[in-house]
Length: 90
Image 1 (cartoon, helix red, strand yellow):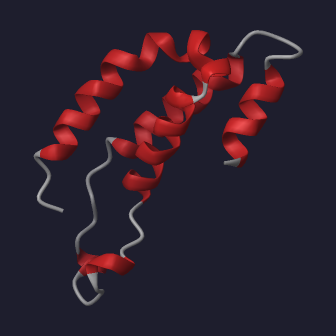
Image 2 (cartoon, rainbow, N blue to C red; image 1 turned 180 degrees about the horizontal axis):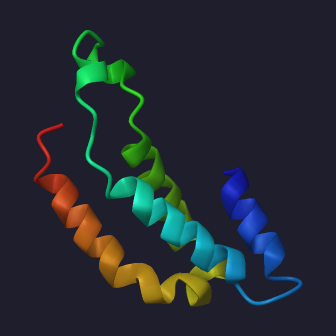
C-alpha cells in the first residue's frame, strides 16, 4: 500500500512523525459511526465503508516491521477498536 511506503520512506530522514499522524487520522475515521442510509440498496460485497479501509490501513502499518517502533504506542487502542468491530452488525 502506498501509505506504508511513504511512512517507511520517512524513517530514512526523521523520526516517525507521519506514522503518528497517520494513525491518529485512521483512528478518527475508524471510530466514526457507519452511515447505513447509503448502503440499503447495495449488495454487501459492494459496500465501500471508510471505517473498514481505515482499519485495513492500520493493519498494514502494524504488520510492517520497519514501522513497529513508531506504531507500538497505538497497539492497545487498535485492539480495542478491533474488538468493538466484532460487535458491529455490519
